[in-house]
Each structure stands twice: as structure tokens, then as C-alpha cells.
Image (cartoon, rainbow, N blue to C red; front, side, top):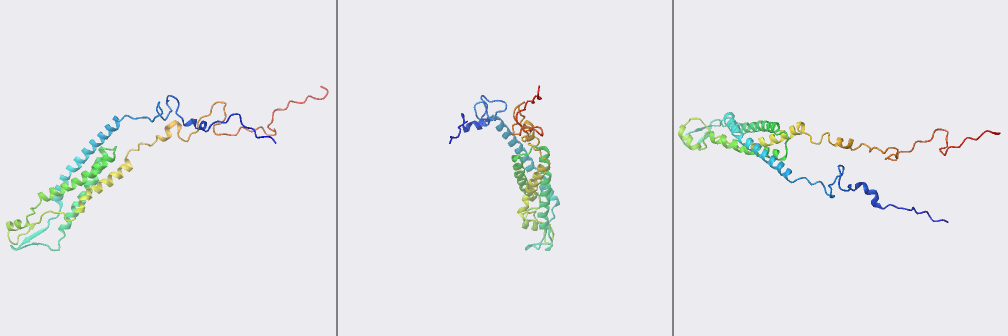
Length: 260
């Protein structure tokens, strides 16, 4: 019985992982730097980008908030009035079955939805790059603009001192009640519409940063590496088979004829 042959040289397990090691001194195809560390980007560039994004977000929030003045003026103009009447002892609704109070809330909500769609479209048009800070600024500015519109419409509308106003106009004279919001949830209509529209237009028309870049690296990630000239196939392709009718062994020299 003979012992199994031992190969003269057995490579270590680390030899199979040489492809993972970066070339000495770095190189154009090395994923790491010359000292074996990741590429270290400058800290100045991210800080400049963050400062630019914050500056852009501040401008967006300020402009959206200031536009709340226009919303307040439109609400004051379009909202239905609640008629009141006094008999010198108390103040009553002139039309007890009227829906003017609900109409004021509904008008504010509809205006908020319209302002949300318009503001989101304008922000996307001028800030097509987008970003989390621009979206946050749009949402915050919409809420602040709704609060500003509410205060503008209430302060520029009829006085909130109903008793003094009733005494001023006299008995039996119809006058307008103060412009108020009974459903405070309508203050969120502008913000919800702005965020929804901005998210939608960004998803449909926004830039796609990685489109067309993955397949351009070295001919595509799925492309096989070229083999060396005259060398074996890198994927272990089988050698070409011998012609039909041959045994695949070494060539046999011709047998000379008898008597030669």
C-alpha cells in the first residue's frame, strides 16, 4: 500500500484573496487611497453644500410665509358673512338656519389647498434640485403662512367686540359677525397640499442622479473581464474538442508500406 502523494506546494488561504488587496501605492483602479484608507473627501465641500441648502430653505420658508398675507386678504374677500341683529338686550343670529360660519371655514380650506398646490409647483420650478431641507422649509412656511392668513383676515374683518358694535348700529339693524375659524384643522390644508404636490412632482419630474451611471463603469457590472491572449478562459470554458473520429490522443505517424 502506498501513501497518498502530497503536493509539493500548498498555497495559503490568503493567496485566494489577493484580488481584494489594493495595489501597492494605490492606483487608478484601487478602491482605497495610497495608504490603504478610504478616499477622504474634503470636509469643506459638505459644509458648503449644507450652507447652500440651508440658505435656499430659508428663502423658501420666508417667501411661503409672506404669501400668507395674500391668502388672508382673499379669505376676507371671499368668505361669507355671518349676519347678527340686536334688540338692545342681546345679540342673535339674523338667520338661525344659515351656514355662513361653516362657509368661512370651507373657504379658508379651499384657498389653503389652492395655495399649497401653487406654492409647491413654484418651489419645484425654481428649486428643481429639491432636497430634504427645501421640503421641510415648504412645510414649515405653509403652516406659518396659514397662521398669518388667519390673523390678517380676522384683524382686518369686522370687529370682535360684538356688544359695542350692536350698540353702535342700534336696535334691529343687521351687522356682520367677526370673521373666525371654528375648525382649526383647516390651518393644515395649505401644508398638506404643498407637501403632497411637491412630493408628486418631484417623483415624476425630478432629476434622477444615478440614472445611466451604474452601467457605465468598466463596460457594465455584468460584463465579463477580457481574457489574456493565448491564455486559458477566465471562466473555465472547456477546451475545444478533437475532430470527429479521432481518439483525442497524440498523433500517430503513418506506417510505411510493406517492402519499402
